[in-house]
Amino acid sequence: MAAAQARPAPAPASAPKSAAKAAPAAGTTPAGEAPAEVTFPVGDLESVSRLQFALARSSRLLRETATGGLTPTQLAVLGVLLREGPRQLTELAAAERINPTLLSRVVGRLEDDGLVKRSAQEQDRRSYQVSITAAGRSLGEDLRHERCQALAGRLAALDPQHAEALFEALPALEALADQLAADRKD
Image (cartoon, one colour):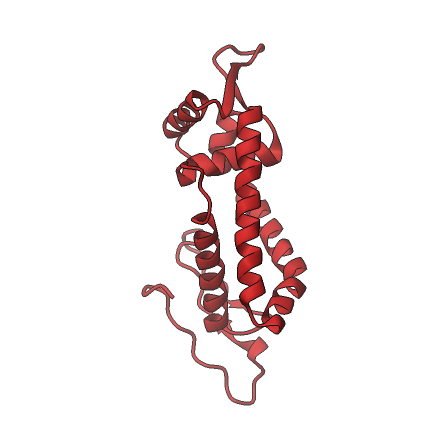
């Protein structure tokens, strides 16, 4: 938990955990407005903090299982192009929250490696569209397969009840990911 964030007072013993409230995250309200309290429907702030840590740590460790010699930023760009298809450089920079100058260098390196192709737009020759090449698609799919295999191995090593609980939580985790992605686009 961040040191700057106040820890909420524990809920009274008679109150259900679903009634626990958290202090709002710093900087989440417009200036001059009183921050609204966030009520957690399940668990308390400590449980939410544990979930956030577990998701972040698992994600980071899984990303490290297969990189193909690419940087995390190069992998992110390649992954977006693999999942979503060709994108304009400006769209890609906004979607991945990457500085356009840095993105141009990242795309240049991927292009030098034959993993993506950059082409000028017919409507505006100053605007470029980036698309994944066959080699980029093959590498991206290979990396996804390696990561899935690594995760499958870890799941197989878990207590079967824990593995089952993770699969049962999959719809909720997907809904959370969709909600986070939608919030990011706003």
